[in-house]
Structure formats: structure tokens, C-alpha cells
Image: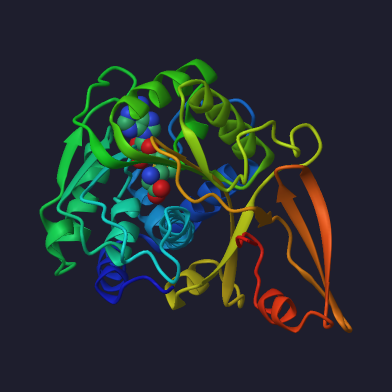
Length: 330
Ligand SMILES: C[S@@+](CC[C@H](N)C(=O)[O-])C[C@H]1O[C@@H](n2cnc3c(N)ncnc32)[C@H](O)[C@@H]1O
């Protein structure tokens, strides 16, 4: 899904006054930081200058927005909405480490039912930037969102919200700090806690650690896992997914490249207070389309398996033809 056009225009407006060389350098730095995603957290925040903030809008926001939209749509499916998530009744969202407010933009495109949004962020300049973007949205829930400047490591009592989101943030924290934030986030969760991380091995490790902590806290895992048992990828591979994101003309210019898109790799977790509708199997690789059959790599309750779907079973084959990496396979 492309960025909503008021958002795209607001990002372009923020980009205009920037020094182009500084912006290009900041884009390279940010992209390296997220791609490498080291196993130890950074000593300094990833985003630490005005150039980084605008570079984030231009180069990272579209990918994180798309990843978040995919995950929140998945949340809808995992609680029984079959076609789309519009029927999910989510009234309130709390975003921890909100950055420029990416998660709320994504949630607002899916959930008309939203009535209340709280965004917690420690960087006051990012808060102002996020507020300027939302002011131009024409969308009441974005314009009325409550922003609060807080360090989530020291303030940890938030009102309960239907959905709590922690996106692309755990990787900036040490393991003990991650646990602290997850415990506080779970306390503030009325229905669902959503965690999204870069789709790197380090991002997956953060998701795995969050998964076991939340299972111990009696959470029901609704996605991406089809079960609550041990992760069959642990130690061998890493569970991640990918979304294709069109590059804006501005980003193409800033990267001096011709590529028309980026593939945003992400790992995620949806934890719930109550049992929902977890899938029976999840497609964990791009399906292989062969002549007359399709090979599916699946994660199931019984571990990782391969399923071959042949033309013989017309209905199943028809469904499998449209499957994408990350889809449910029930
Ligand atoms: C990579 S950005 C992600 C922003 C947003 N969640 C998204 O998905 O686009 C991580 C954000 O977490 C914020 N952050 C990191 N540590 C924090 C802390 N201790 N308290 C509050 N915010 C924090 C950073 O300032 C930054 O805005």
C-alpha cells in the first residue's frame, strides 16, 4: 500500500529545506544501521540529528509503515476477520517508542473504530515532527493523538489500551531493558501486544526472547506462529517476512539509484490476552511455482514441513497459486 498522499506530501514538505548532501549521508548511515542490526544495541540512538530524522521519514518510514500495515492486518485475520480487518473493534492504541508515529498511521488506515491513541517517545524533535505530519493528515484520530515525551525505561505505567505496539525499537535496547519494556507493555495491554523488529537474525532473536517472556506471562501467541511450542527455526534459521515498498521519486534521487522499490524485511509477534484464531500453518518462504505443482515451506504445530500442492486438487491448487510468503495456510 503506498503511503497516504497527505503523508507523502507532508514528508516532501519536511525534506525541502534539508541540505541534500547531509540528507544523502544520513540515509546511508540509517540504512547501514538497520541492515546490519548488530547483536549488541547501539551506544547512541540510531536517530540522533535533524538529518537522521528526515532521512528516517524518507527512507525508513515507508518500509516500516508497510510492515506495520501487514502485521496489523494479520492481527485482524488472527481474531477471525476473514477478508480484511475492518470488522475488528479496536478502540485504543498505545505506541511505545513511536518515532514519527508510523504505527498509528498504519492503524488508522485499517481501523475505523479507533477513538484514542497515545504515543510515547523520548526525542522531543521527533515528537514535533510526528505532530506536524499528523496535523496535515485530515484524519481526526491522528490529529487528536496524545503525544508524551517519556523515557520508557524509567516511566512504565501507562493506561491500558486495546493494542500496544513496540515497533523497530527493541533492537535499540539491551536484553534486560527489553524485558523491562515488554513487562510494562504487557501490563498496559487490554487485548493485543504487537512487536515488530527488522528481519535480521538479531531482530528475530529479539522476537524469540519476547515470545518466551510473553508465553510465560500467559499470553496467547496469534502470529506468526501457529503454536505456542518451541520455535523450530531457533538455532537454524530465522523467521522473517518481506514486503515490497515502492521508492518515492525523492528517495530515488537521494539514493542516486534507479531501483523502483525496496524489499522491507521484518520479524514480528502478535500476543493476545485471549485465544484468537491462530493459523494452522504459516508460509515461511516464497512459494516455489513449478510446472503442475507448488511447493510450500510451512511452519506448523509439528515443526517445519514442506507441502506439495498439485493440480489434481483444483480448489487447493487455486488457493495455493495466490499464496505469498507470510500468508496463513489453513
Ligand atoms: C527506529 S525508531 C522506530 C520508530 C517507530 N516505532 C517506527 O516503527 O517507525 C525507534 C524509536 O524508539 C525511540 N526510543 C528508543 N529508546 C527509547 C526510550 N528509552 N524511551 C522512549 N523512546 C525510545 C527512539 O527515539 C526512536 O524514535
